[in-house]
Length: 116
Image (cartoon, rainbow, N blue to C red; front, side, top):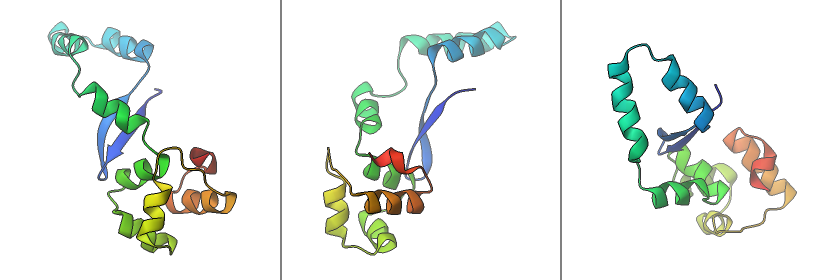
């Protein structure tokens, strides 16, 4: 199943999946009473749309940091930089040098291209 989890403070906050996948899941459920609650949710979101969009389109360094529940100071300690440097890197539209992207990838355990 194709899906994405979005975390905050180390806990899953949202699960995003393609609508076709969601519809397939609905079709697989055997008991219609189970489906009623899910179908009713289709009409009203479980989250504030603006909050979800802000989180999804957030600066990638900030999102990765928040997903792990780290403060800027904690990430700064792990990267051996000042907290003010982390704040600068978390600005919208920040651009990172290749060496910095490699450090992020190693610390967060993800691919370097996530920070391009």
